[in-house]
Image (cartoon, rainbow, N blue to C red; front, side, top):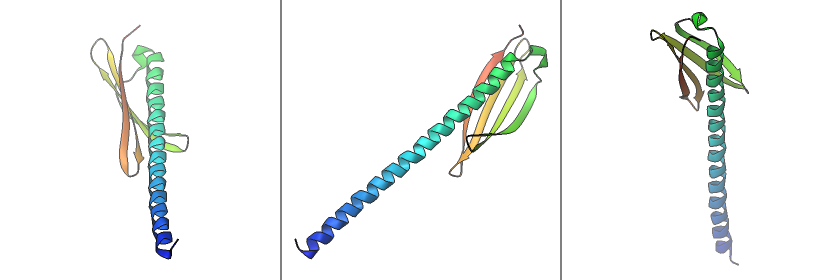
Length: 114
């Protein structure tokens, strides 16, 4: 093998190696983002369950925000209660920052007196 053949082979292996590294790095980021979405869904669902377990008359109309930390992540959970007359609508939004962009998950339910 000549020196030029060795250099070309090393160049090809370097390009393949860098491509693989970028592919795995991107995949790892996507796994983290999907995990963040899962955690946000858990936080939103948890708040809806707590609201549905509360007595209807004790559910205050208005908007409330709270900071929550879960698995070393910081989330902002905002919930808004709207009185629709005979029922109340609960909207829960969980937001967080990922790579400088705001991500969010929203859930809505209707709560009726029991």
